[in-house]
Image 1 (cartoon, rainbow, N blue to C red):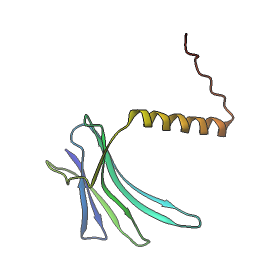
Image 2 (image 1 turned 120 degrees about the vertical axis):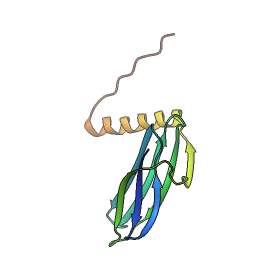
Image 3 (image 1 turned 90 degrees about the horizontal axis):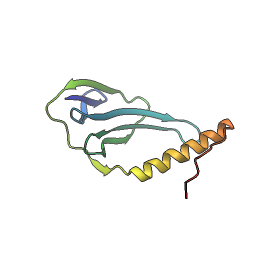
Length: 117
């Protein structure tokens, strides 16, 4: 399977992440500025057909940190540090909320079909 081997500051291997032959996994480094600067590394995924979110890394980074991602093939990966099931109802509600926010931002009107009685 494809896997991400994640290293921090040269020699320290943080994790080997992968979800098998079906699914998605990501390594995301994000920066947030403003009053409280924040730099963060998140390595996670969604294996299919398990339909649960998994996390290998969820950590704060600092200026000067060196993160390296090596893409490899591996028969085994590290056990995720966290697993939680997907929630279709919650996910749909979040998508609807996001859609309403974007519609308001762009001045769009959302029209829905009325339920038949």
